[in-house]
Length: 88
Image (tube, rainbow, N blue to C red; front, top):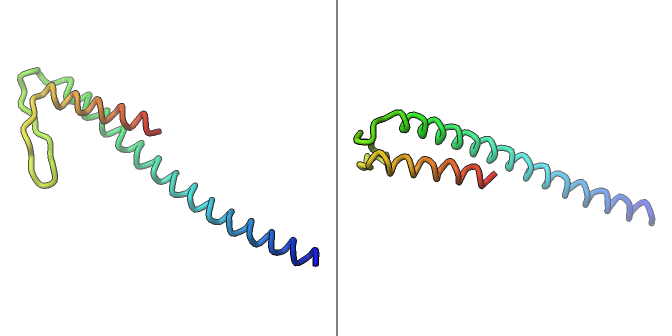
């Protein structure tokens, strides 16, 4: 009787552990992805800061490129960087 109860509890815990381990792996993958986004945003921001204020820049949206003023692009990059930092 006690062995069956212990075995059932063990099997249940083992199943929950496997499920939790899968979730942890998924979170690690998401963290790596967000870290890459963060690096790209910071690199973009650094490149945009080097440009003169009157430089025309474009932001890709799908397959199209939309015109943005250089200052607007910097603000967008900053907010993306900040969003990435806040998510983590």
